[in-house]
Amino acid sequence: MAAFSDLSTDLIHEIFVQISDFNMLLAATLVCKKHRQIFQDHPKSIMRAAVKNLLGAAFTAAARLAVHKDNYDHYSKLPSEEHFNDIDWVPPKHLQPSLEKLANSSRILRDFYSQR
Image 1 (cartoon, helix red, strand yellow):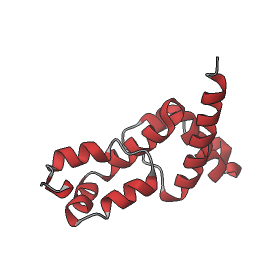
Image 2: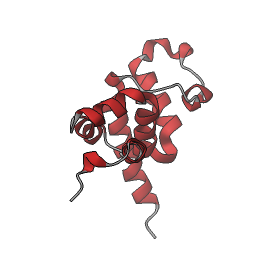
Image 3: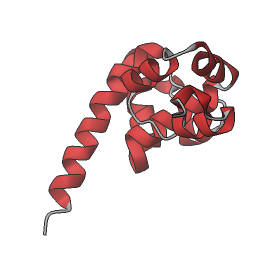
């Protein structure tokens, strides 16, 4: 029987970009050296995918709110929505808990307003 670690690098990368939880992503990267290396080779694309999977359509608004809450006294320096859509933007580690809370709030609102 083949082990998960025997999968190709590309396939493991594709699995990583489907993860929507930071703790699960961390656990997946700690499985073996190969997984850790895949994450180290593509950290921006994997982290960005995790955030987009976590937040869904609320990604840009939630990212702006998290940055605003982090720098609330520098509101005039808040980047535009286009800044967060740039492929190079990856949330700093200290914003991850805030983004997870916003994702939960977004999910609650989505579930509430989708009731028929």
